[in-house]
Picture (spheres, helix red, strand yellow):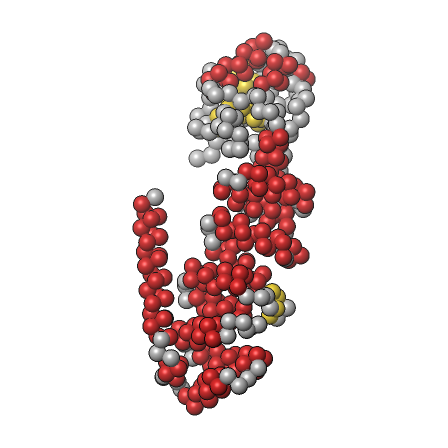
Length: 356
């Protein structure tokens, strides 16, 4: 935490220095743009034309573009930023301001200052009407940049909502609804998260969301848990394990079924590619318990963690005699009484292959 704080202070200080240097340079006025110019007469003429104020909006845009091109061709990014800042200040109602601000943001991105760029991308979507450049909305491009730069969920939720609302045809709505739900989860806005997950499941198109291979299962479980009476959780893992072992010793499929999670319970191979939670409450253990007694290990598996626990059992009927029972803490922060209680969440068929 202290390292992150120090990094944040250094980052803010560095950005402040960059802004200060550019603002000091800008304060020198038009002399700043003229100095060290290889084609000074041409640039002076353009600046004089711009400063005359005798042109309509379209003509003024053409002049600004010519000045910008000249400064950019010399690699004078700081001067170009100063000039465009002055354009924005002098013409606050200009229809092309989104374009000028986007140029500033792009320059800051090229200079390696994405946080500075984000200030202008945000300004574009909040202060300036959208315009289309080369067939693409500048608001859309700004939102995509902001989502790539920002990590604050309150901001990413805001930008994602705008993206879904205004540009549904340009994005994967299912992916963005899921990520919006994740943003709301981080903010503790449980009702909004649930609503976003409902939207996600309604339009889900089968696409894999990078970093979230089990997105559909997560969303469905979240929704189902919000609607369920969670009466299967255990405060004590030891108590849950003891009840499971007692049910196995009794050979009662019905007693075993009563102990399983009522939401998201699954049964799958260890390396099954597509994980799909099975929430069928009427999962029948009877066909798998015809060989006699089911045996279990006295201790949990060594790869268990503080949040996930595995218990090896043997003696099941049909193809796989070995089952690893899987236990985890229930994730439902919207229900404090059930949150972090233990549940029997699923079954893995066969032994887990240990890799070094």
